[in-house]
Image (cartoon, rainbow, N blue to C red):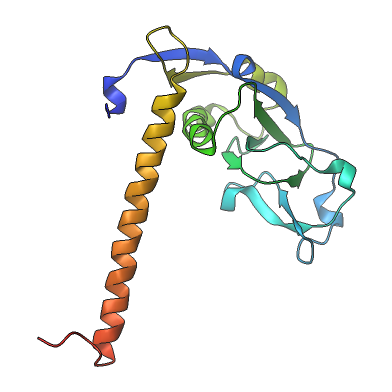
Length: 185
């Protein structure tokens, strides 16, 4: 697979690739975020923006997924792969073409490159987001190269899993050695 610096890139408007909407009017201060059953996604910059689990009116549930969510003030993009609730300060990007989680992860990393130009006084609201341009790998025809994005992210995921398996195996071996259950020389 070619490296990122070896491929052709093209500029795309978010509005050409995604339908941009905002969450429903749920007041996070008035919902029980501990005892619910459905993810509550907020403007957080960590934990995939998960702020707990809630039970709310089913008509407020976002049933479209996978999607990218971006908090207005934080401008932090996350991929959501399940049904969720969210408030009006979270943008939801639903791809106009069916895209996998891996492709959306790639695109969210490209969106993250623009994070620094947004702030609490200049938020990434849905109007600005629709006009946002991002660079994506392109095919010879100049279309987004979704196959490359998929392969790239799958390879990154494979390497991470491989690294974590090696690390966890090392931890188990270290624990066995501490208990005297190590391998016999």
